[in-house]
Image (cartoon, rainbow over all chains, first blue to last red; front, side, top):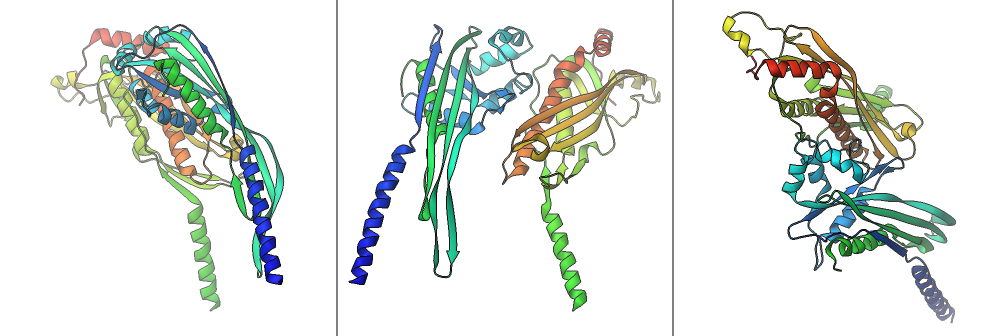
Length: 229
Length: 220
């Protein structure tokens, strides 16, 4: 009878924990908002390419993981975008796109193209669009507590901890053929992650940066190709 | 037994110290710059030990991130050779101290460079997170570049050519971060040399006069 009671208790505990975890999982999903402003311009022609560059701002350099995520998504799918890698572009145009020297505004393109070899190199690589990516992920809230202990009778973790992250990124797109700004796309994603201590720590992670990357990449693809994936 | 214990403890301490020293051999891409090539021959004069330079630094600040040993020589040498080979028609390392060559043979006169660049590393410094703030590292490089004509006269001295780079670091792989930042700082210096050096007033005047006077000669 005692054993049956314990098994019954364990079953009820597991059921309630599963329900709790499902609720946490739903609550941890990231929400994304994407906005776009666009100037009338042409989509990518045959053989034309885009390059994605991380902008260095006083707040710091844009995370390399984010620009790599964008490049990976855009180069895949049924409507892949031809990309020139950031490293290749910077090497081909060295030193004009090093962090301290890169053009800050589209108006600087005219003086850049006046430099020896720059226009010829860009034409050779057939890069049509340049997307400057700027932004970062910040922690806006955190709380809760969890205790983990180990003894001769066993161990486990109890409690719950959470944190909320906000990922905010913006893409400024330059048309190198027309030497004008083609438009801007911004993506803002917010999500809360949890770690529940139910004997073992069980993480339920929201990934707002990943959500922002996917949102921004989808809009970038439509922006420069006129088509979805 | 006591002696053995002491020897063991000393060896253990030594091992710990060695394991706290992070060693890096700087490596990265130094591309050729997109610049107009001048029809001149330039000799490169490097300070002794330039191409084998190893920088040692101990961080005894609040973060106490340990000691650094950075093999910088090969990369900095590669940078200056790569950049100057794009700037000038002929470039070669020369051993003369002041860009003058002996008048041993009249026929040799035409084989001297039009001028020399004298290059010296002034400072290399790693800024740990305790200094820079947050989880960020920074690297700063400063060189002194002098222009000497074929008669040994100092035409221009640029005492501080600075390259700088800053980034958030990876706690588990700070070596990769420092290597990346050093390469970026070196490339920054290369940009100053390729684009800004020729705009200096005295350099500009000398370049104009030299280019009109001669075609690039082979260097002895």
